[in-house]
Image (tube, rainbow, N blue to C red; front, side):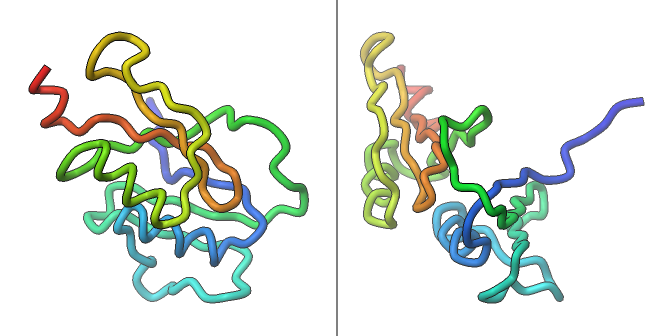
Length: 131
């Protein structure tokens, strides 16, 4: 017997606002027949093909330390640099630049969402195949 991941949960201060922000990052959608609305303390969004879900849950305590678990994002189209620019324009904040630390064309950039949750942007599959 084994288990599977049902969804990834993210503690936050404002579930609705953060779910909306991440929908713009990942092109996710609300769960059919369960739309997220302002004031909801739990908001779930899902990948358009239904293969992954994120659940945002409001908690009273603020984020205090580095995440122990984070998302690594990969551009579906284009290059890491283009996606990095889009995410920063969307409101992400750069936390650390790890590009090229392990040689030319390697690495990632650590970003934070509006509530300070860290995530990384990697090179796209096309970029990795060029190396």
